[in-house]
Length: 104
Length: 465
Image (cartoon, rainbow over the protein chains, first blue to last red):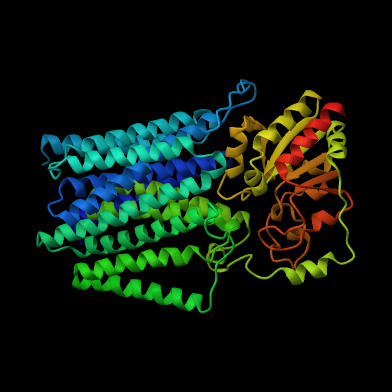
């Protein structure tokens, strides 16, 4: 096994513990934003898509890279924007008096 | 040693990973959650920005055009989606992430084989797993999207020999995977990709709509895992950290949701719950029992003269888009001095926390939303419980009747309240397809009709009550 693979497994396991620790503190009120926020974070895979698209040297690789970048970018941008939109709505009593409805 | 450019990239990735963790940490309270999401977004911008410095990238056009198209699409959907459609939105974005991970794995394999480099066993295994998991997550999410959007029927879709066929597809995928690792070859990898796409669809089709909270959580976790695996392929620790964080979150939610239904994850995935014909049970239990109907006017009076009211929302609230109407009614009641709270069951709706988001949209303050454990002790002192489109999560059979299919599922004990008013379209069954003993109780009244219409009528009647 390569040194890099070992390092990767190391990071994997440590991140797993951090993830469980941090996320177990999220209250159930926020489970939907948690899900859509983490959804945006896994959009980080667009980073891989950028590397593929940027170094492509055949039409097939260009096409694969392009599709991957489009999907990944939609995942990242859409995920963060929709989470922000949701979290904007969570308010404590009294602060949410101004009834400003703008249903899309 | 790394040169300057590579060092800048590596250090920025570390900073971005820390920002992700900080962002998630701030999600532990509604007061800080919004800033948490923004911190994570800054981490993302940093990670993606420095990646452009990578020497491997020689052409920027594909990236620029692709990002632009993706961003416009994503932001458009994110800004226009109705809050009631949030579960399908999350499923859709999740599927896109899965597809990206699978495509990156395949493309990297093709690139490496073209360069004639020998692919190490660690890398090829990661490529195989990344391809399979990403593809399964993609088609699985698309099917889930279809079910939630009601393009596909929400009930479990079953056909003869389903399990045998699924097992065969899984075996084929495993065999192809082993072949790719040992022997390489792009044809095998493409076949594996195609097989995994079929597998993802077959895996979600037999799962019913009410089990979606579990399914969406699993798919979320799978996409995270697929992203982490591409990190192994590209030797990029940033991808590993971010992917694993998401995987951990999805896994945790999956376990929480299946605990809230008192069913194992396996039972949710392979049980085809709610598929059984319910005619027999309906006929046998309905005999000799009657439900008592009520009118909007009587409901208004019962609410107006109550001291405490608990509202129990369910998926029916989302379907009728009645969250604003509920909130208006609650405000009117509060003006009369009635104490109003909302009781939220963990699996009410179609995704974890679905009801909380809808009520937040309607400006209900989050400290008025109570979890099951907080509220169950209060029901005996509650004057009126208003059940809006919830069914199985308030069925006392889950607590009292060992023969019930949902026996053992933790429920909201609304039957212990002094009065219960159930808003329901008709006497149809809930997702589990079983009769609800609550409806026949002494202290239960049924208000039939569309939830939003009924609530509006109750609101009007309240003005004169």
